Length: 324
Image 1 (cartoon, rainbow, N blue to C red):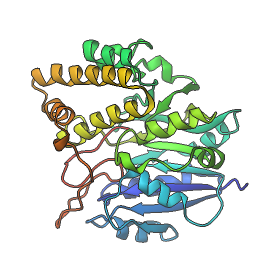
Image 2: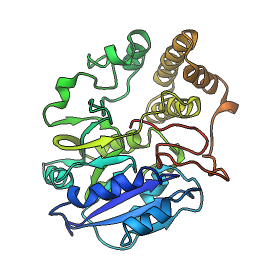
Image 3: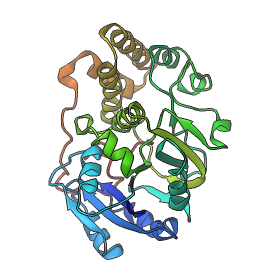
Image 4: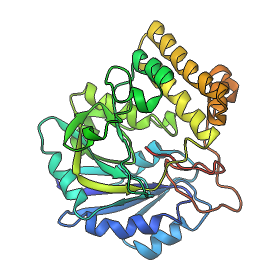
């Protein structure tokens, strides 16, 4: 098997953020044999022109529609040619020099199939990207305590929020999909990413399924990057999709009793925050209680698309990105 890394960027209306990522990749991949693939979800802006001018050697996959993040990753992975690892990355990420080499070295740790770096926001603050396996108790803890407080206690929160947990390398149940290095062996054993989830929970589903086949996810703080996104909490459409997909994925992996309890805890969470005036939670609550309000496909690019984060970050017309 080759040591080559295939860098897969999934974009949608990403012209404003792609230059930063493309500029960072050569230094981030220093000492690594790598190739770049851009899967474009029918962007309505100059995303492809940016790729052509700044990364003329990249392979471009024209998806023909806004197919979602998982579909873009699968398309990039399915191109001819051998690679030892696939780096799935959002267009609004900037990796620091040497980051990919450090992540690639971590794949040599026994049992490791997925590696993720430390990510900071544009303001320099840590982005809490590590996650614990979803459980009913954790969903209830988040509803009653809030994500920040519950995340400091492993039994009560899914998001790992304690900054001390990010200081050293560790194994996690799953992590944000904004940057994921997946070994070819893990990809072959786990199978394709689940395209039915469109956006959100597809990285959860893949990481948990990889664990089912014996591959662990490893966090490597020595590999670092910056993630600009983060608007899911401000976009009712994105937050609804994120919330519904959490419930859908849990139901796929558990029996009806636990799935009903998990859904009830998530409904309680959104209801409490909707009563407090959060409009994103009002939209999520409506989608949970009324299936007709759920998004079943991603909208196409508008006729006059504005620039914005792509891939998993911004379906057309939502006006927001997401921290993965």
